[in-house]
Image 1: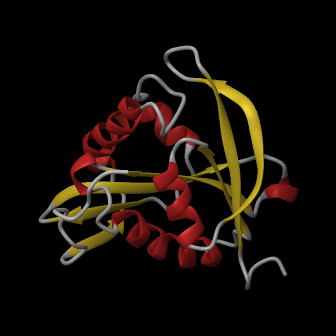
Image 2: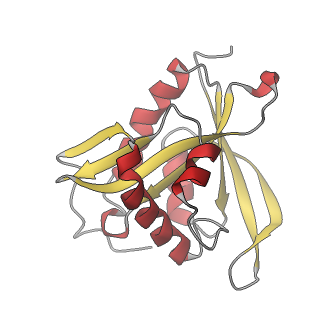
Length: 175
């Protein structure tokens, strides 16, 4: 776990809808996550068109501190089938310099009511078992562990990694 004592607080943190012009910063932060080897099995960030096409249009947010993007959160559909229209998968990434300072929680606090306004009743996440900070964040904002997918993917070094499946069910949508 990283020492977060010297990290800036979430004071003056702005959460705003992600714009196309935010992509260079979003991509930079995504690449920082890729470099950890614990955030994703991807080895390179996609181009904007591919990323944009694979994420839902609503519920995309960035966190800015002093005008600089320091985190982002977005949803992907889990299926095109109508019966799963209210289920989405979340991705959340925080810039290296802002990790441990509350950015991830602030992004989720903005996202969750927006998902419910969009009719989403389940937000799911798959987190590598070694990513303790991400697991703790998801659980702190109301996700629960629903299982472990053993040896679900290989990291860049070819090591098979387990993925913890988490979900957050809305208390107001779909019940």
